[in-house]
Image (cartoon, rainbow, N blue to C red; front, side, top):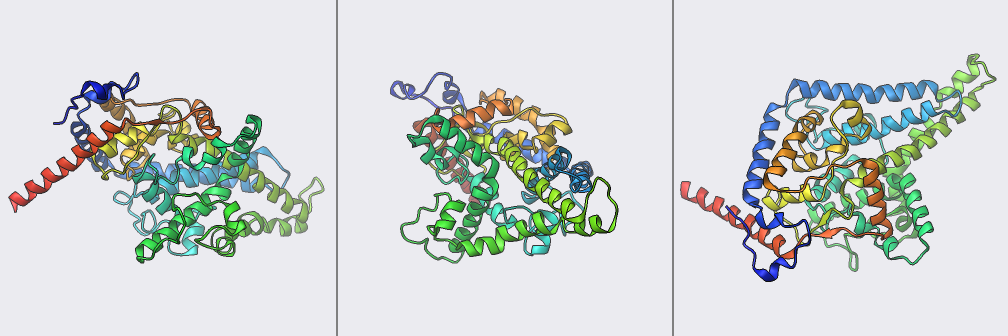
Length: 436
């Protein structure tokens, strides 16, 4: 066991409320987390599959209602329905399937599997998860880079670092808030799509053993602005639009509503509606829904790891080590939770701590695990933050505009915990050698 012994000069590094760090047995904490994760995974089965089907049906129902009403006029039913479908298809269905949450328990291995869902062909992308991002690119950016480098410099979703230009800008604060609002309405196509595609390109370079272009910082975010200005060294604007953005824009916004032209011109829909009117009503509803789902996604996604009570870390750590599990708790926050409606509206991102501890579990498992994780953290004295999503939105925006900053985990203890991880790993290897 490892209980940190602190010299007097090191105590000064700790701030009020951080005394728990000196008492933490990092190895015991990791052991408890691992055991709980294994227990939850073994319990997964038909109930998890039925729950997934229930959420898929809810998501598809939103789409059906929106589709049946989109041509009559610009209306909130269609806008909210399309927005919820897009949001839930990404944050709940694709997200947990692409992490492998249903690999072992779902009988349909040809679809509900992380190595199948949404990837390899355009047909799979179109049927499983059709959005601004390429599923393959998102899998690398999110599942690998973000989850295994949470709140480190290599985390591609580190809000404080990605918004450094805005934080350091001398523009008036009202203009900063206006820029944040613009980002909230457009971030999926403006930032997330081009940046995830950059991560796909970087992974290809690493896999092929090719060097990163000289003078390029791979941690720098790629946005539509850098793509259109020609300063992005990884791919051209033509490639991004032809492969990633273009198919979604064309099919989702303009081809999908085309049947309304025929319906409106061949049937008396009343209210003076003809085909062209119904078509453009649908297009407008889809565009308004796009802004709403960007806003909804921003509130539920971007707020997960930002705030002046969230920690940042200097160095990487071993996957599934004590430091790894500790960071998932200290750099994540949960929201209101516990029932399917609440969880659906949060996109199941309200279990962010549990999800980061065990990304390969189902949505239902996270509902079950949250009380147990809170109890486990209390046992070890590790802070567990659960707060209203709109309070977290305020804290995230404060980080974005530079009003506040995230906390750095005390450097001495970060190093000590990393040493404990290395010593435990060495001990395991020596034990294996003795047995062999």
